[in-house]
Amino acid sequence: MKAIVLTESGDVDKLILTTLPVPVIVEGEVLIQVKAISINPVDAKTRTGKGLYGKLKEQPPIILGWDVSGIITESKSQLFKVGDEVFGMVNFPGHGKAYAEYAAAPAVHLALKPANISHEEAAAATLAALTAWQVLVNHAKIKATDKVLIHAAAGGVGHYAVQIAKHIGAYVIGTSSAKNKDFVIKLGADEHIDYKSQRFEDAAEDLDFVLDTIGGDNIDRSLEVIKTGGTIISIPSGLNEEVTAKASAKGINGYFILVASNGDDMKQLAILLEKGIIKSHVSQTYAFEQLPEAHSAIESGRTVGKIVITV
Image 1 (spheres, rainbow, N blue to C red):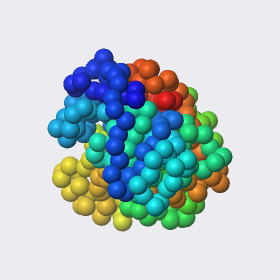
Image 2: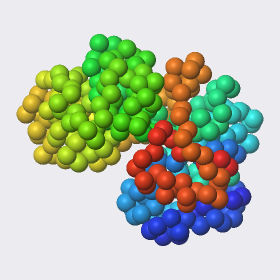
Image 3: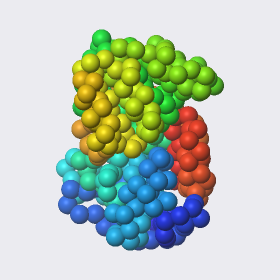
């Protein structure tokens, strides 16, 4: 099979197209003929030696990628049969090995792909959508009456978070650049803040929840707009002890989460996708051989929605 391996940490030229044996699955796994792959910031970070590189370098060859949609060609699980179309985030935070024509995956990390969406749309709705779901539903447990701020609302995680929060019934404020205002409003946001021309602290207050997808001083600034008893969850950098202490001093819950593979959560997303309650916005699609270019695009930090690779 064709696969793209990371020979060493570094620039996109370290992603090398090669040929490897098709994976051999074990009990509880399925073999997926990959039709589409989704790219995330963690892919690029890991490639450069950050992210999960320290763990993966002990398991050569390093094959990046966690987000897949495809067709099962072999099954050693009662959950799925040969021919099933499935999607999911595989083995995160471990060695996903999705940058290949075939991927071995624990069946419990997958869900059936809705028939009315493409493999590209399904692959997009994996790590990013799963992050939004786990943050909003499993951890923050937002309610219909909550006032919610989603930073980088036009991005991968952000655009799913806006849709999920609106489905729950929350009042949603989204930040993005002015050029993406219409996109954010169409997702369902009640208000939009152009972060380039307006300080969000001057436009939002008394919030129940903030999803921080940016990190840095954005975390401290977000604490200024959250009500006592509210919550902030950060996903890119984590909350260090100092910021956690600041949140606690204000009577705010502040913490960091890392998304984890979960087939049950994927099934919930599949229901929302099938019903059209949430939709994947795929802004760019690349061929498998163009994967290094896709890495460069995700590193620009200006991605709207998701970047997808067709295999």
